[in-house]
Image (cartoon, rainbow, N blue to C red; front, side, top):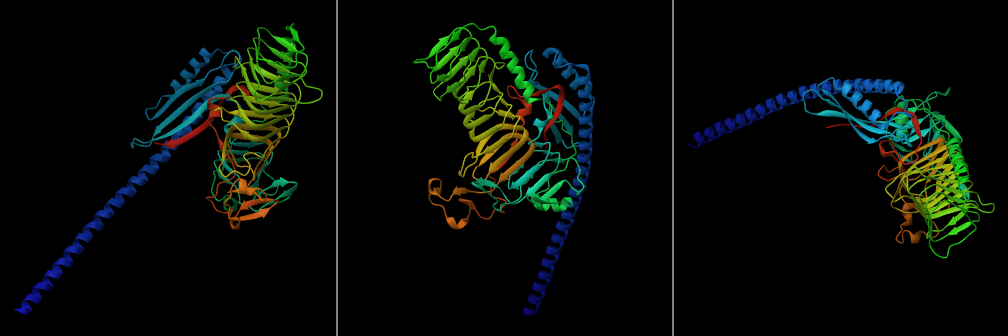
Amino acid sequence: MKLNNQKGYALLNVLLIFTIITIFGLSLIGMTLSSQKFIAYSEEYTANLSLAEMKLDESMIRLENEIDQLNNEVDLNNVTAQLLTLKINNLIESLNTSKDIKFSSQNIRNITSEDNRFSEMVTIKVEIGDSHRYIIKTVTITTAADVFRFSTVTEGKLTFNGAASIKGDIYANNGIYLSKYAKFINGDIYRPLSAYPVIDGNITVKEATALGMKFFEGIDPTWHPVKDLNTLYTFLNNKPTMKDRSVQFNQFNISNIINDKKKIYNNDKNNTTIVSRESYFNSSKEIDQSITFKNLLYLDKNLEVKGNLFLEDGIIMTSQGSLKISGNIYIKENKHMKNYLSGTITLDNEENFIYIDGNTSITDLSINSHIYSSGNVDIKHNLNMNGTIYASGESTIENLSNESGGTAVILSKGNLTVSNNNLYEKNVRQIDAYLYSDQDLEIYGVGSNIKINGGIFGKNIILNATKGETYPTRGYSAYNPNLNLSNFSSIGELYLEKNQSNPNLPSRLQIEFEPDLIQNPPVGIPTVEKLQITEIDQKIE
């Protein structure tokens, strides 16, 4: 009896094992079939995605050809807004000839008789096979100069001293120079070891050199050519896309633009007969016509002029001062000091402007218009504006903030230097701005800690940056009373955070492309006399 029980248990075990093996086998077969179906689906989706991308590229070529033809037919200086809108709508409709490719558009800004800023957002939507998923590309048809479609553009060399972070496309005509050593000036020049930059976007480099690739690595003045892309990617710690594109330089002449405003000043001056020799107001004042002030005006009150305002010996305007003008403001150079603008300036129409003859210091200024200066411009602290500053001389920017919600566009014919902004702070300060120089543009992000939402342009560009926290060796407790000095190295009277190679450590100089520069150009931004296409975004939904 006991033997029979043992035989029964043995049979039961055999049946149980057989059942388990059977279930496992069926499951394995099911998984294999599912995997084969998934692989087949993936291969089909990949093929359809590739086809959709080809259709999208073809659609872009068709759009570009139509815009080129429209540029040949239309003079933007003479066309009406209604006619241009009609032509754009007809153009977009003519492209909708395929059921699986859909063009749509939305006007953002139309031209006026005084202003040829134009922006039309176009969406191209291509279905990926029959998946009900789509590749969607957004582009803008605009009169904004094509340099504004990049985060960083240089006609010459782009030099990274340390760990700047760029998000957006880069165009460097004469090469990119990469160094893991930052740079800052504190009496002497110091070069602390940091890390290589991070670039999140497409890169275009022109003008091949005899040394090989247009990328170089090392430390100024000793640079070594980078031999291949794989080596380049080890320096950048990522793999940005290399893209062949073109940019037209010298599309606008800053000196000519400023001189045109001076001509308007000379014409308006001849039509003004009211003259004042006042230098200071004991109370706020309202003047109901254009007026000329012969002496240097010190303004810490409210002044309203219903017409043009002429300041023949300059102005010193404090943070308590306020100007409200229904015309233009013309400021001549003081023989003994530069002009100072602070407080609030309000012009009734966005076509009105401020012309300044000579050097100017701008500090804590809120303004709703644009400025043209024939001299140097120094900008400090808060600049609230959605407009443009033109300077025929050199420009400096220190401790800048922009809290207005607008974008400050600063165009300098001379060198432009950005330094001492948000010094020794742990949290980054965001600035909405586009910075442009016909000469060299240099930005510091070592003691400074800033993020520029917009873009930059320079004949040559130098970006100096470290990562993490930075404090002065004397007075650091004012910024961080609990600072653990073992986590910092000391150089040039600064404490710099160690472990600069940590990819999670944020850069103290960040630049991110802002599409709004193209989609909604600020007041006074330079434009060109033809329509151009700028790619804004591409995604799959």
